[in-house]
Length: 270
Image (cartoon, rainbow, N blue to C red; front, top):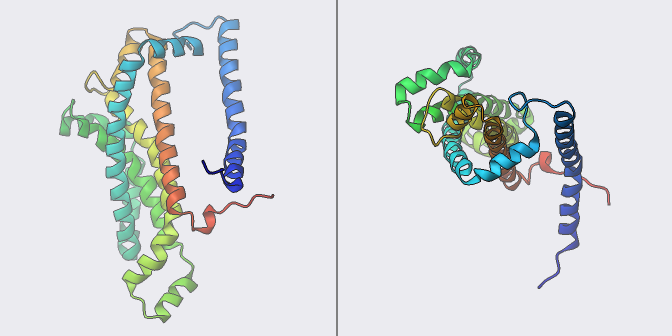
């Protein structure tokens, strides 16, 4: 077996050190949660102990995992729909600036509408048990962060770069392909990372207004109504874990895609 290069070891060690503060705060938070709820005898319906939540999850891990995967599929579908539409609209608005100025106020107004207002409407449009109704909710949440961040990246190119392309006879398509789109990638991935978390929230919110019994949001709602709060919190924690995992997956894709970009470079002292 070949030895691991020293540079790789240093990189892994550096990443671990970067995560140490977050892990320490997480462990401290759990310890305080457990200690305070025990010391003050906090009732379960107000806030269950972390140990009770962990026990509830372990006892029903198979069922909760299946429910979580079902909701994750809805979130992933909404993420794909919303982010694809956001990127396409951003490209269109960056190409036709006048159209962008005309439509942007309407986009801001639509983004101001509480997402919870869309859930009953999409359930009525697509059917209460149809996963598409939840995907649409997630897509609406994902659309605006992706569109706004991508548009910002497409339009924040330095004028000298555009002038250089023009001097070489590059047309509008070449400017987009060689300058605007590469410049927009870090901005776009910022929107995608925000959307990755919002997609899970959108799917859960949609399920709160009705859905199949094997959906995580429906399970959390039912457990709360049946006063099984440790299991409800176990579902919430699982949804949070899936959201974090989704965010991490997008972050990995960003690192693989934009490693050449100056914004992705980090400098460490030896």
